[in-house]
Length: 145
Image 1 (spheres, rainbow, N blue to C red):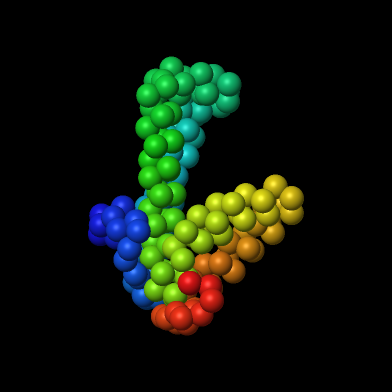
Image 2 (image 1 turned 60 degrees about the horizontal axis):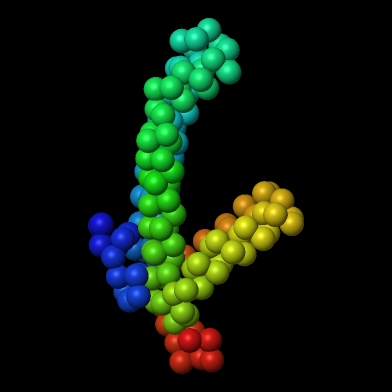
């Protein structure tokens, strides 16, 4: 599984069903970590009597810079894994893998900036459905690859 998420950056293919499974597993892991962080913040706020600035100060003091950098690195690793499995799925469809970077990051950031987060969510959902529903080798041999 580690090889699927963090290996074969330049090569490798992933069919529709395996992509869906790995994507859902990654989303579940990210959600569980996010819930854990949110619960920690809520518990900390409750401990300090509901005072949000005091809770933020307490968390910053306990975690420090190293803790925040660890959390940022963890979510960066999730982003890398998500981009890698999308690139493998694109290669399986017959498209260049670097389109995952273009579609997943650049287009998403531009849409979010200019059209808003709701439209960005719809665009991301459409990209996800395209990766799940388009069959293997659909674009192989076309001018796009």
